[in-house]
Image (cartoon, rainbow, N blue to C red; front, side):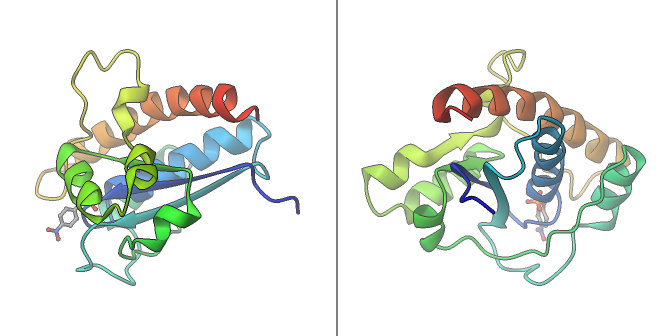
Length: 163
Ligand code: 4NP
């Protein structure tokens, strides 16, 4: 298999709700675009509490309802992820701040982006809100926000990396 041209890591707090959903939704967009071998996709959490766990059952159920299986296993983001990935895509501003604190240099810092900055309809509402303590509607909203932002991110990746 050829080496991917670009590698993307989605990041949230626990790596069990938002970033696995972002990863699964974006992977589907990439596969549907015929770009599976060119774009590597990963996810991680700034926290380690849920390390080793599958995505939250509510996130997996919402994704399954939309035809996507979430298979990722939670892990904590490390500084090495800055070397492995071209883009580090954060779900909210706290994730951005936590990632900035881990960044070693300007090259690391410039890789960190808010996911919803790629959604032209987000109109400055730039976060994917944490659904963990809420009801199932929060997980449906996360899925919708990830779909909209994922489309914009894919367009950005295609034009920036020539895939
Ligand atoms: P996530 O959601 O960051 O979207 O995976 C959360 C998962 C777990 C916790 C917080 C947020 N927690 O406090 O355990």
